[in-house]
Image (cartoon, rainbow, N blue to C red):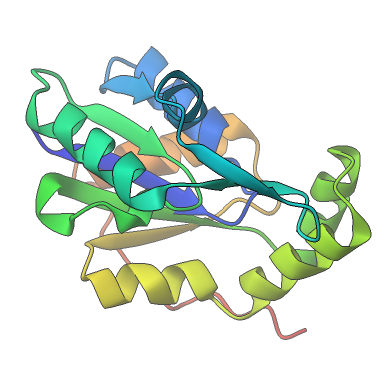
Amino acid sequence: MKAIIISGTPGTGKTKLAKALESKGLGFYVDINKIIKEKNLKVGFDKKRDCKIINEKKLVNIVESIIKNSKKTPIIESHIAHYVNPKLCKICFILRCNPKILKKRLKSRKYSKEKIEENCEAEKLDVILIEALEKKHKICEIDTSNKKIEDTLNEAVRILKGKRKCKYGFINWNI
């Protein structure tokens, strides 16, 4: 079974979309944070970035094993979900958010000033899109900036059902 991958900068709506797709019966949500905890993949903590350091290679191997052994479509979401082998994925959604809006979302999560700046800069520079392109994923960007989850879900479902073509590279924040 091939997976649906949802990647993007933190705060773009990955988890909400993954759970919404699951609620529509389009697959089952794979909780990356749960895997990291259960498989003890945390190898340290980056104080400067205020985040866990995880064994990404082991995580990707575990996720790829879940995909290969699934009878239903796995829905994988993470800011590193696009690290999964594209041959195991039917589609890679890259969620995007205007950095001005993203900044507000991350502030509401109590992210540090440095972490907010780093993530907004990554969004401005298309870091995750570029990484997914380098991996050769079938990419569909969705701008979540001013959308409710229902709107993002409807757009994703239209893409999955072939009613809207995949496209990327059309987002330019002009900031």
